Image (cartoon, rainbow, N blue to C red; front, side, top):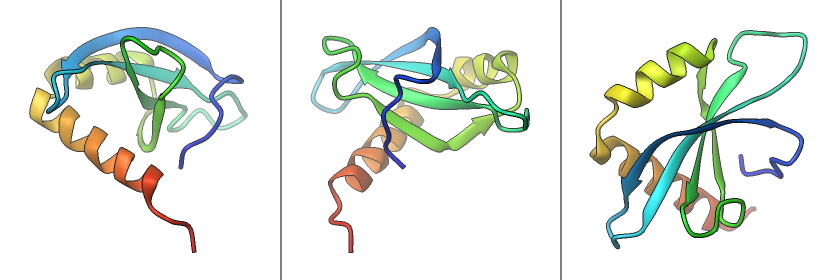
Length: 97
């Protein structure tokens, strides 16, 4: 579920966390515009030193509002963020068949 995010509005960095290699990542929320408001906001992780390069969209992690997304990310542990990052990077590297 990795795609070009240039057409989506960034809601700004909400949370920073460190991966297992010590690299700092930003957890942000992007908004997908459209007629359906349900699940409009989704999680995007990006390395701090590459902002748009290396961005990973986790489109399976969705919220109906930005305030719900913020509240969820505020309470999400670093372990959970690292697990989601590892999973998303693994999907990105997996061969398509």
